[in-house]
Amino acid sequence: MIKSMTGFGKGEASFGTKKITVELRSLNSKQLDLNIKLPALYRQSETELRNLVSQRLQRGKVDVFVTVESQQTETSAHINKEVLAAYAAELREAARYAKLNDAGVGYDSAALQVLMRLPDVVSVEAERVTEEESAALLAAATDAVERLDAFRVQEGAVLIADLLRRVDLIETFREEVVPFEKARTETIRARILDNLSKLGVEVDRNRLEQEMIYYLEKLDITEEKVRLENHCRYFREVAAGEEAPGRKLGFIAQEMGREINTMGSKANESNIQILVVRMKDELEKIKEQVLNIL
Image (cartoon, rainbow, N blue to C red):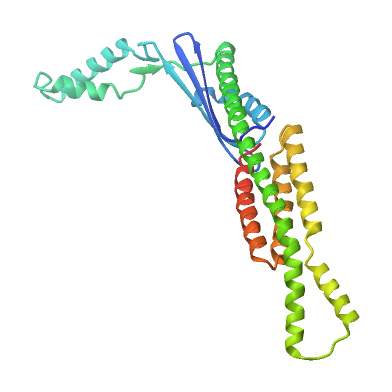
């Protein structure tokens, strides 16, 4: 099954008063480049999360975003009223001792700002992540991975349809070369004979034929056409039969490019060169699209 390396997936899970959301975004990359961003409280689950994503997605630049929303109004911070009152009494006594006006306008507001910064006035309960909460996080991640994988499959189907269409076009252009190839041979032969006649010199006809045959054989593109046909057939076979053919399809496209370039260098005929340019154009689009295939 052909899969694209680009995709998006989102999974959600609830645990108590918390809503856990996991988002995955992937782009094409030669290897798996995994970047995970999650709250510090859930760092203990990072290894499991990393293993889950890497086993399913294999390749690509993958960004994982974990967000946690609390639906409760209570906070983990508490004001210790007894400690605050004790500090306030000490502060008032010190103010009177220093003959300060503790009944003046703004005293209570200024004093409260000072008191709230003193030790033990505000206490924060350390939050703990239970195994059940970690399981909820992994469940949301699993859902996100499955959705991203389904997105990859859907986009992969579109990609491979486009690639095979372009391979068909290359084969069509290859077949259109045939009539021009035969006419090219006659044109080259006539050009050589015409140039010799203009020189007005006697030549050995047998030797001339041998040299012409040798020259025309060097310009023959039959082998290149056969190899290009084989590469196109192999491209289809790999696309239809392998699980993650992205790299192999890229190698096949490179081989197709070599044969097309050789055909262009041997063309010696304007119509064949035009067809070679069209083949190159389609091949470049194939190479670009193959980079997105897993």
